Length: 66
Image (cartoon, rainbow, N blue to C red):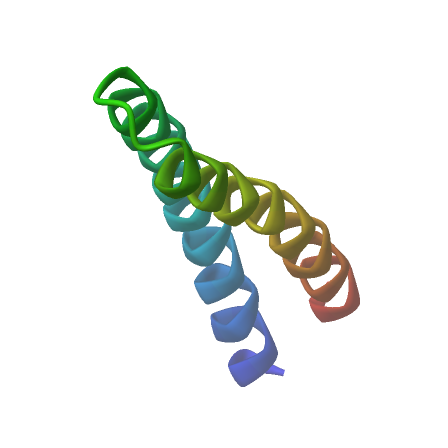
């Protein structure tokens, strides 16, 4: 049971870390767009959206670890 609790803690860390990366992607997407690189901006926005999907998966895993 101790290992499951450790996994739960790691998942919490991954959720926070993922959110930080998502926020960073959106900031860089704005920078890329401002510099005229629309393709890069769209790619970074897609990464951000995927990070939201990953967060849902991580939350489901966290629930399963409880």
